[in-house]
Amino acid sequence: MIIPADSLVFSYRVTYLKSQEVFYSQVYDTIFDKSDPMIQRLLTRNKHNLSARLTALPVRKDDFNLSSVEFRDALCLRYMKPLLQLPPVCDGFNAPFTTTYALDCRKGGLVIHRHHEIRDPFHELSSLVWSCTVKEPVIRDGSLSDPPCETLIADFSARGVLQPQATALFDVRVINTDAPSYINKTPDTVLKNAEKEKKMKYGCACEDRHAIVYFH
Image (cartoon, rainbow, N blue to C red; front, side, top):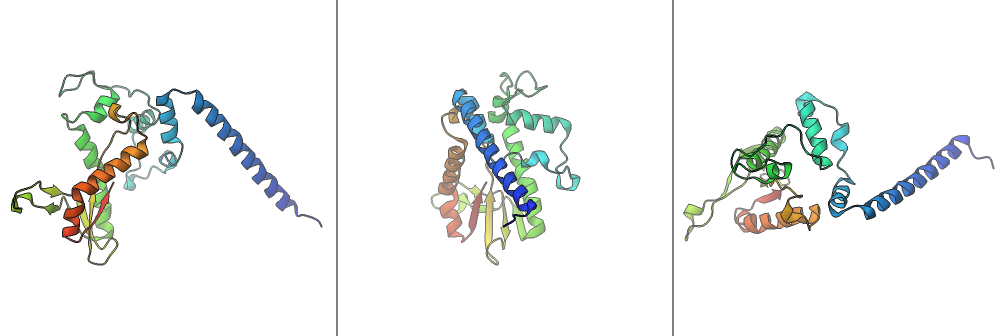
């Protein structure tokens, strides 16, 4: 029996790619085992599904056209390199303005600014797809409760996401998974714990108004 040349080429190519995958996996494991904990954390975080944006077309209408500074800063954050041209001190606490400090400081408004940069485009895109999108809807008015309790507000809501005429509530949380308090936890664990906290806080109130809630 004569095997077509194209089939042989394809078979050899598949075999070669598998051997290369095994080889680079072994190289990765060797480097990982010899690295300190912070580098291991970096490698684990960046191993899967975090490089798609590097090859995305810089389409302006989709806000993918990063400036040179934004692109460079994103690479620095990805590989735990210091950002360039940072101010020397925080204008809120007068503390040294490092990358970690900038991601964690709650006084200067940087955290809430990052939060809004995620929420606002998400809400804008949702308004193009679903009806009745509302920014910062009140889930529970604490002043109307007896006794008074905390008022709960989501980031935005949309109707008809999964069920017709049913309201879905969306809430975003920005987390620095490399903060010193999280250093002994994996990024996945940090994010899952944050999701559990959100569910405990908003779950009952959302069920009372028969709403579906999403946490990001």
